[in-house]
Length: 165
Image (cartoon, rainbow, N blue to C red; front, side, top):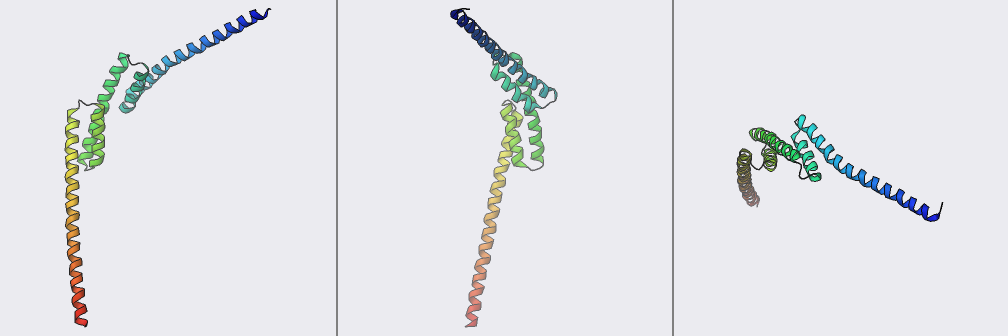
């Protein structure tokens, strides 16, 4: 075999290997979005709405024009928002305002059209502000009482020193 024939054969093998790599990479990209969407479907069936939102967002990043992924993402966002709204409502009733605020913020972020969550979030935040103001006022009152006691103790100490002299 001539040297030029061996070079052509190497070039063909290299081209074939390169084409095979390109096919594997391209097919891997497609299956990646499909695999991620499949994980989203599993989370969807298990009613793990937060995970479903995550997986559908990942699948849409790979295939942004896929209508099925968009619809499933919208539905999962609404369900996740409703679940976070329920948790936020329950936590608010228990008086755990910070945790309630966090859950309600998640509900609003997942579904900005959830007006109930938005309104309740506003009420929880107002209640937090009032609680902080009440705590500050209470601390000021306690500080004033303590200052009066200290002043009274100083006066008594001075009077007892004068009696000793």
